[in-house]
Length: 70
Image (cartoon, rainbow, N blue to C red; front, side, top):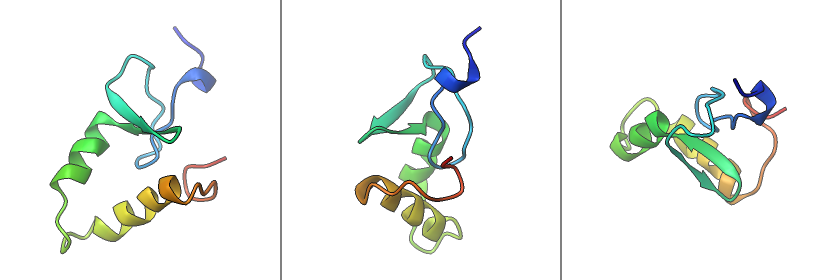
């Protein structure tokens, strides 16, 4: 069993996932496979769209504040 601090934390949902779990790293930030699928399926008029857009800005603007940053 690997220590919690070695597991990547998903930028979107905040879940710590095992390193072997599918997902993607973009500029050092991790997005789990479940959230990756949600990003691909979301529409502009979806209630989750503003949240997803704001979370993805953390990657592009290299932000470190937000609900899942410590």
